Amino acid sequence: MKAAIIAMAYSALMFILSGLFMIGAAFWTGQFGWFPLGVFSTLCGGAVMYVAQGMDKRRKWAWYAALVLCCLYLPSVMFLPMGAIGLCGLLTAQARREFGFTTGL
Image 1 (tube, rainbow, N blue to C red):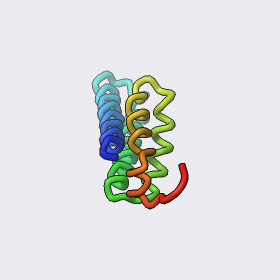
Image 2 (image 1 turned 60 degrees about the vertical axis):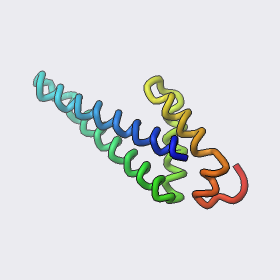
Image 3 (image 1 turned 135 degrees about the horizontal axis):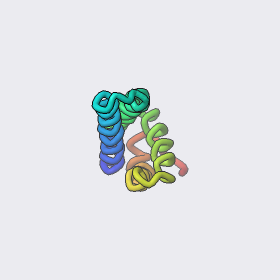
Image 4 (image 1 turned 30 degrees about the vertical axis):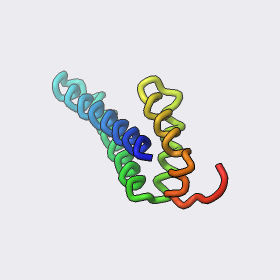
């Protein structure tokens, strides 16, 4: 379970850093086409970090959101390890019990 939270926090960090880099590059070069993408990336990083905090507090909605995010990470090259580690952590029997799932999956 801890591995899934760490994978989500790491991916949030990657989103935020790449967003801040794009915002800085927009101001540095004067080409402000990167600015909206940088803001969007930073906001996505904040949303992923919110999901990671929800997982740490064992919120059921966060488990579903993390499951969707990890599945979306799998086809990408940059986020593939986070998606695989996150899914392995989310789908263990212990993690499902911690989030209140007693049967299935």
